[in-house]
Length: 175
Image (cartoon, rainbow, N blue to C red):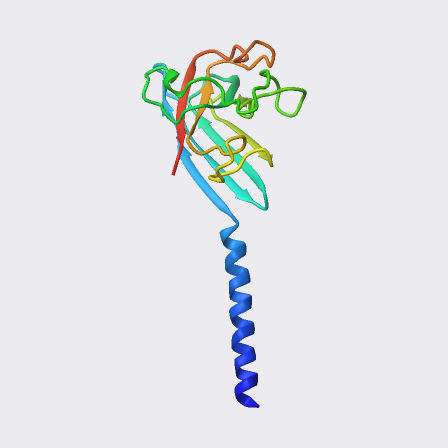
């Protein structure tokens, strides 16, 4: 009887451990760093955390001119060009018109605008179920894309880019 009770305790402990380990593996995190582009001094970091089918994105950027700036996910993880053009156009796997995130039509890469303070520092965050990290779904997977910070503001109207100006920072969304 003691052997059965001990076996049951061991099995229960294993099941609890497996459950907690599977919950931890459901969470993915990716941290990336920006490179300055277009002769700017813009730097910063971004993180993507996927948990329970939601991706939370947070970017912290420094070295900007005070005011509003656009940030977008672009189609390629290539930041080799001095002006960031090697990252291609906005990531648009669903072939929608450019627009404002969550309003009408918009690209999956149309994150939007954020404000840099008087010291040139800005932060933006977004949580969505429209992205995933490494899931393999071409309409949702952000891996292998580029993250671009622009000198200007996205007007949410001009096609296909939002007329956001020069690319002042770039980061590849890769491990």
